[in-house]
Length: 299
Image (cartoon, rainbow, N blue to C red; front, side, top):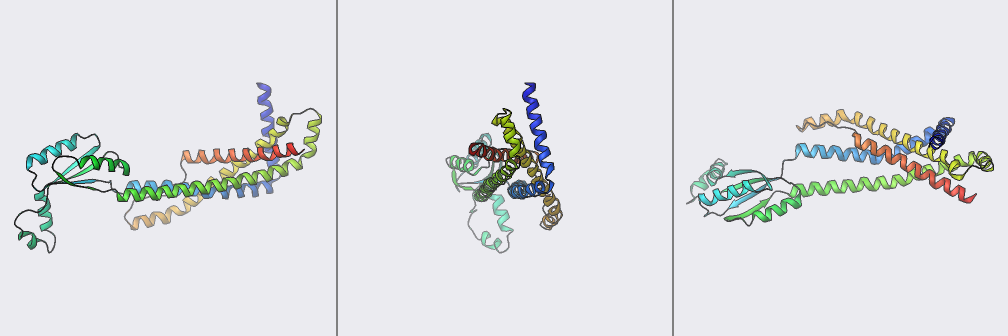
């Protein structure tokens, strides 16, 4: 076990030396990888901020239940009790026909018209806040509430939720596609970089083979080279996103204040940061493995 760890330590040290030995080439490669990864990382940052903004500025979706005009006080009370006991209902607000009539009388131009009516034309109603505000769950709850005795009409306030969910789904799909395309680009960059590294150290590889070294032993430093290159490229991408978020935080905050919104643009969170670095390192390792295996097979 100690020999295995020693071999990996030596391979990692050799990879670091090779990165440091060509600082200009290393810097250019890291910039190329960092810029490529910064695009999907920025998209993920924007998606996270949009979710935060939506959760703080979008009102909770509700379901409006209108009773029949001839429903008496006992029927309304029974319906209210059923709603409050329903497991899918978080809160219930009662809007009596008298409250609606008084509010409509206060509307400009409607007072005289309503006074001329022979009786109150408005039904008793309930405003229900569901536990689960997902569009599908709200549709199911509304369908169930339509079957309650004395209910005339159920109005579902979920159109905005469907639009928001569709927009977020579109955004996630776009970010994932961009990440996939640029991930292929990262593999290609690593593939070519490792290929040049192998050609540069061709004499060293041949000598190692003559001394009895296995292909796995010879390839190990190149694998670590690709891993480190991807990992450092991910750090560059994180730095780009962090600087961009810090630069835009002031203007975005001023714009939000103009609309009366308390919003602060934040950079990538801890989970997204670790995911970015892990994916970058794995893609670098994968590109190196492809390049080294092709070279070993050809030679």
